[in-house]
Image (cartoon, rainbow, N blue to C red):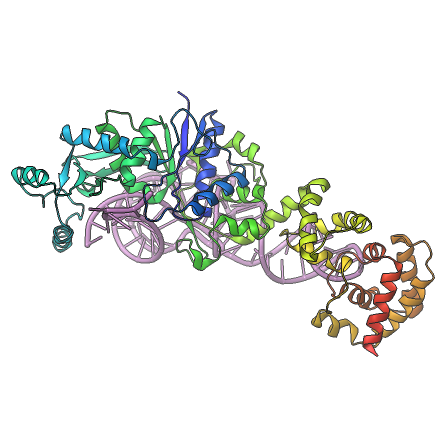
Length: 482
RNA sequence: GCCCCCAUCGUCCAGCGGCCUAGGACUCCGCCCUUUCAAGGCGGCAACGGGGAUUCGAAUUCCCCUGGGGGCACCA
């Protein structure tokens, strides 16, 4: 039987990093088993859905490269894969179940439900609603005939228990006393999550449901409903949840939870996938940097960790640096150029592009987050807006600085073939002449030319900048000193 | 209150009864390389939550406690 899995986000929020991890695991499992990865839009909550969220989810799933084989936005044998298009189907199922005696119209008021829960709390029994606050059969018929609105509840068989084997958690058992007669159809006739999701899983032939642990205790409902529909329940796998640095549920308080924030901050999709995969699964062989393809080859759902994992941006950042360094120059140039040009507010001309290309490899190995490229290259294409204050006071306001700047000016002025090597020779000559250490003698030049003590390698930078500009900047710094 | 899940360095992951004086990665700290910053190399700090039980032997099995997480909606 072909494996069919689905990722079913609700467009009630941006794509969350935790959801992305669930999507990734579904993707990996499907591809590792030559199965089908389906995307479904669980948009039953008419109140909270927005097109903006829907778009955000789609664009970030695509950005991550978690391509789905069938489903929302691309279609397939089951229609639109959007729940809001299937309300009739859900209603049909619910009413069939009512006719079969497996579900019922419920008139229990919120007050009665509260009372039920209050009693349960007082007596220490299960708070799961068991249908005991319903009016008599005659009353139900009359009120229905009167056109009174009711909700449709699933009738959980009690006593009893649902047992199932969760792929990541093992044997699970839930006594039905703990499972409530949940609402399938709201009083306005629209379906709830439990109904819609289960019906779709059945109709779409989902074989494995891989989702967050927050749905673990709802699983008996889904299994019971599936069986009531006369279908075979899927295999379930519940992934542990992602936590914030304080061990509490990952939320905006801890920084960014929206995938878009990471894309904008300059993280690479490969790094993000790799990091998310590492959060709860290990490749084996102590390997940690793994491509999506390799992950597919080696993915095994049953070895996924049961521990809740804390989302640690520092490791993500490290991984991002690894991926940036691994990019080939063409690829890196393609993403870096727009960033530099955007930072400058203009396009680079032909000669500047040459400088850009020459300096790029040096910049690449110093980049962890994409936007840092612009920070490192800015001095090459625009005058120094202001010197970094700390850098200036640290290396410029010293007696050696004047000596170094003057020495560099005259030494560099004599260079006629402006190459890294020639600059190297000239400056080293200056060092011997002035008897300055490399540190003392070169740092002032770096600050003069780049505005900071931190910059790409000096000689290469000077070559890229050109002789005239280099000398001009050294003079400007010298003037500012006196 | 009721039900469920989880428990190894600060963090993620290894470990599935003896190979553990517990391994790798991130972070942090040294040193090396070096014109700065990175990268890289080398080294270091750092953990089996507590208590019982089983066993010749337990990080690994079982029980209890504690701690953390999830669920208990006409939200998904």
